[in-house]
Length: 339
Ligand code: PBG
Image (cartoon, rainbow, N blue to C red; front, side, top):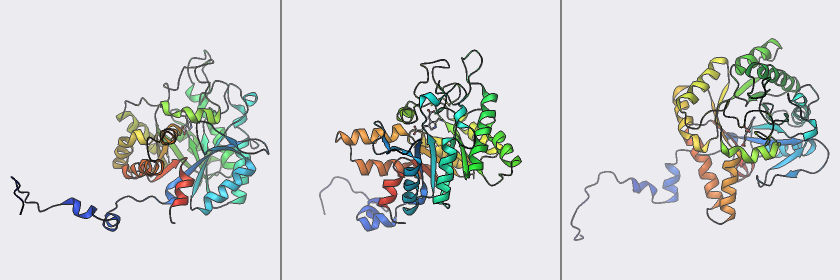
């Protein structure tokens, strides 16, 4: 007996189940597995070596031969899918992103190479024009150059999606945030006999400051420095808006999206959870470049523990309700997990 002045007559002591690692393992609610991940990969022209990206440590731009070996490794680690992004030379760009189209585009060739080498790996491709336009916007500008024109952009996105489908993409992922593009892409895929090619829609994509390192990776950081709107706020969502995000996602679902995506992930866990409670459609979350870079940067300074914070950031996204996570950590995390 202690001579404490109070007594806690507790029937519940939740700490009992946290006493040992084995008890904690028994009550663990959320577990990461390699099959939760989609690896975003950057592809470039040429036969040369991979290129480092200063603001994305450990991520490299890969020529097609290196992309293929990377995909073999990811598949062997149990990662079911990759999402391909292109970086083309500035000299290849124009106002309408012409090099994104056609059957010989960089991404079309990359899809064919990956599908030939690792046929079972799910290949997803980004559908947006920002890596290919001189102004860095996701679509075509209006005549006065002050806005991104919705309907002509959708037309261009359809052409891009069809080219990727012909090359063998399993899912196309429109990341542009134009209105009506999911229904339009769905109809075009169906009409061309690609009923089985799915749409992973970037449904709730916010105008985030954390996209910075990605824009360096694909060379789209010119936004606001040449003709066109100063930023992407005329098409991406306002970070302040929760209802609008759900409205966007439910519209994409009604238009035929197979998977709904929330992006960024870590700062938008409430949106993932809201959406989880309102739909039975699978949800993807994109842990974006800035989320990855800030964990690296803080760990490099010794301010946080790298692996612990990395894993915590991913568990939080899954716990919020994401069925799958796009993350630049995919490969190293899968390597550390059993499958
Ligand atoms: C745009 C696009 C962006 C990302 C993927 N596709 C960002 C942007 O709007 O510039 C960001 C991914 C990341 O930051 O990791 N089509």
